[in-house]
Amino acid sequence: MHGLDQRGWGRSVRKPGDRGHTGPTTQVLADMAAFITPHLPADPAADPPVFVMGHSMGGGQVLTLACHPDYQESVVRQVRGWLLESPFISFSPEEQPSAFKVFAGRLAGMLLPRHQLKHEIKPQHLSRDPEVRKSILEDELMHNTGTLEGLAGLLDRTAALAKGEVRPLEGGALRSLWVGHGTEDKTTWFEASRKYFEEFTGAVGDKEFKAYEGWYHQLHADGPDSEEFYKDVGDWILKRCEEEKAQAKPEERPESKL
Image (cartoon, rainbow, N blue to C red):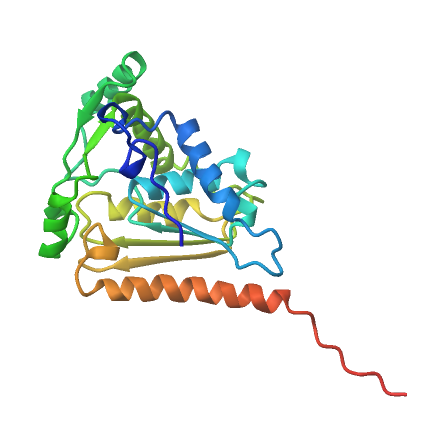
């Protein structure tokens, strides 16, 4: 298992001025593709299949990559399955910015792209587990700092997803899609994920949507119930690994009798 420290976040930040500086969407997608590519199977018959998961903002980014025409052959076709955990397709009603703030954010992003701003997401909106909330407050890598350019890109990506302007391509390379979302998510919007899945993923033959009743944003860290999430994800991946193995196995032919 490998995890990406997105540009501007985590340990990719070398100095305070780098915080939140993800670059435009073209840079975000290129970074993800560059991270995934070395892990793609050189020999599909021998190497294990690759699955890509994105959470929250990363879920929206992963979905955008999987739908982008420029990456269908180089990346998407070689990924066995795509998983979205609480994807950022639209703001929740609790976090929805005003139309003026959206307009101002896009305009300012063009004028002062590297200008930093803080946006704190309340830990009590992320998990029902008190220990997880405490760990979020104590995590120095969760700096809650973005840039105007990053905000503008985020707003554009979510708007395109929510309207269905970005969706799996007919005849495209996206083979399998899993989406999981908590019904009480107060950070990204459950209803937006369900609507996207129901209305805009018709080009994907193998797909599944899982609603986690009463869960919050971090399905992977939402208390003891999270074991159910891990099992769901593991079972979904293993089933497709078994399918790949069965397809790669040469057919047994009966011995000819003279």
